[in-house]
Amino acid sequence: MQPLIPLDEARARLLDQLKVSAAVESVALDDANGRILAQDLVAHMNVPPKANSEMDGYALCEQDAVEGRVLTVSQRIPAGAVTQPHIAGSVARIFTGAELPDGADLVVMQENTERLDSGEVRILQTARAGENVRQAGLDIKQGEVVLKRGTRLTPAALGVCASIGIERVELYKPLRVALLSTGDELVEPGTALRAGQIYNSNRPMLLNLLRQAGFAPVDLGQVADNPDATLAALERAQAEADAILTMGGVSVGEEDHVKNAIQALGSLDLWRIKIRPGKPFAAGEVKGTPVFGLPGNPMSALVTFAMLARPCLMQIQGATYKPALRIPVPVGFDRNSQMRDEFVRVELHDGVAMRMASQSSGVLSSALNADGLLHLPSDLEIKKGQQFDFIPFCNLL
Ligand code: AMP
Ligand code: MG
Image 1 (cartoon, rainbow, N blue to C red):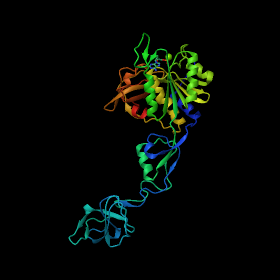
Image 2: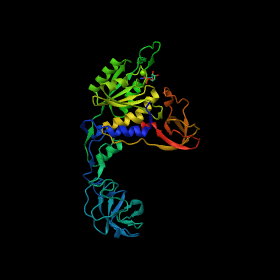
Image 3: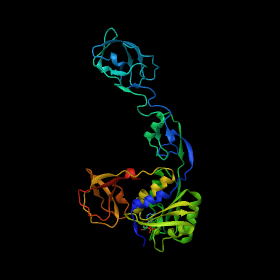
Image 4: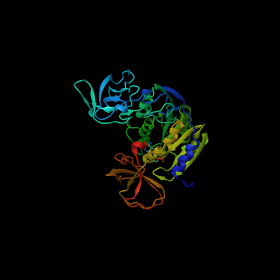
């Protein structure tokens, strides 16, 4: 028997070997959300390009911005307008987002002024240079690398791209990931179950986990539990996709054929990862195409996908690995020492992690109301009130 491998070690070993294989394409900014950047983006301008006003008020120079001073209004500058050079000893009427005229160095907000019947303006509060001004380059400086290759674009990132005038971006193409469900017991919903059968619940779960992560899944359906069918399915997957994800059949029983088939067509690492749920997990290659074999139990499939397969697939697609967000939270229960790290389905009650009723790896329904997974380390007796890392599902999947 192989020893149990800690999760972090297994993931690091895999990430170390895997190379980016996704092709690159140019995409309009509006269509780039969730995609992986294939270029460093450098700002060719300052944002904002010139100093502008943070307030509705009056732009002037520091030497004139003295309490009690009465000044004439020399120009009016709404947002988007072209300015005239500032005349010392006057104020310019200015609005939020309008460029400061050359020579003015601050804005007095209109609440701190008084408009006289003469049309002049009295300054009610002394102000300092820079007050209420957004300086050129405050947000982004020309020459700065704004986003690095391997970044997953978010709506905020798209906003930043637009702010520096970027219209199209170079992105990695979504990785084609072949999905294989193994198991003679599996039936798709829509067909009545016969004795011994269950519905294939992993297929729609993994298909949509893949879609959600930005991959292009290629659903190759079910594979019968025999060597020939497994070999044929892997060969087809290898021909049609950039990476392969199998579910079930990866253990060491005589009805598990994935392991031998991968070995026959390529090479295999079969690991007993030191986590629960989540044993066993396989990684390898078929004629150079990376393969990840998830366990058949639905909760094990979910956890190993999130913790191992997804980060690996992301890296093959060009993304820089970023560990899932972890938040220390107090535990609302005791636990005996365990041989493996546990990822416990929990719900947060007033910030305290409460265990869902069933933690069986075959029970998927207890993931429904869970907020995420609580990582409880192995070989440690855990007492209520101690803090451990909580990983929200919204960040993990
Ligand atoms: P296996 O990894 O093939 O030994 O399967 C472990 C357990 O997970 C067995 O109880 C299988 O029936 C179940 N299982 C395997 N694949 C699926 C699937 N696609 N959907 C639901 N359950 C599955
Ligand atoms: Mg099976």
